[in-house]
Length: 459
Image (tube, rainbow, N blue to C red; front, side):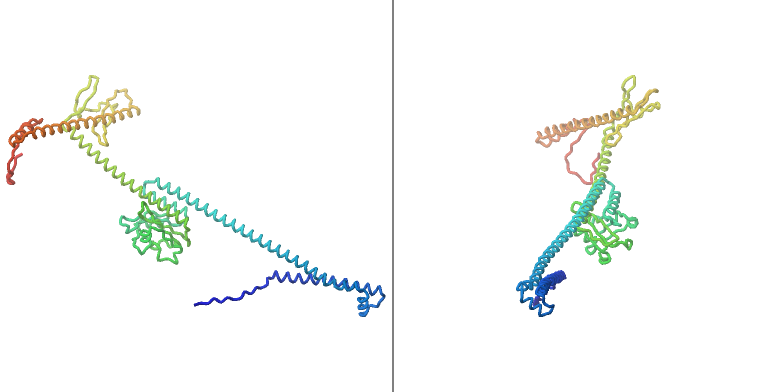
């Protein structure tokens, strides 16, 4: 067990204290020196007054002759003590003044330091606010793009300019998230890598796997110290000294990464990392929305194609045994065949009858020699044609609905009449009779017998 040894604290006199003591001694000696003048002058006056010779014995006689000189003799002590007390007071005032000045200097230094820190924090907040504003503008601009390559290209260029990275690249995972393919880069080297089909295989032991599994940024402050953690770029990005890899997350799923590389050792702070992550998430959401839009558009196109094909088949069956063509002339309306419609002069105009992308007919106008088809006239004819084709389709639907209702009514009536027959022969006779009464039926046979697999049934 370690024992703590407490050493006595030795207080070393400060230079200021030594200087104050020296000044005090000087002023005390100065007071004593001035005080000595008084007994000397008094003794000399006394010797002269008594007309004594200037001898040591005369000094003693003068001192004993006048008791006042005894009081004067203590003047050096009194003045010395007075000057000592005065200097002590002055020393305390000087010390207090110096301490006050030191406090003022410390307060000024603290105030300057505080102002500097406030200014630095203000600049930092201003820079972060500007970065956040620029990041928001970038996110808004890329969200308006629907083309994924253009969206990613703008994202990497904007991120490089905003955050000061010399190389920014975006990798997107395949469906199984085993490989990340380079899809956009801000440098010419990165674009060459993209043209070469560069990709990185992801596993739990490398950066791709870590970012994909943990859904967290991966920061390398200095690649010289952490070279093993770098993304492998086949030696093409040797200028990189620091790197941060941000996951692209959309709807809780990591769809790719954004690789940001700098030419200097760099450790992004928490705010910068959060802004980068927010931008990366917005990129991922924009890419996912563009993909969903492409899939939706493809589905709509396929649906429109099927609808057009179905509409063509429906009208083809509807017009199989019908000839629906009418012509208006000054003599009136007449029924014609479609082959009889011919263009007689250059003043004619044809407008297709188009229903859900499929042409089901044509309106042909034969103009007079002086006719001029203006844009407003053509627009009017096209609008009328659209209304005509909708009316035709509604008429077809109404006719099919009516026929379906008639068939359903016939089936219900036959079923009702057949349900009244309890005898097999009567039921078969009733079935043959009811089926024979259907339109376009000349003869009908209802046969109940065992079926021989080798017997051919004539149709």
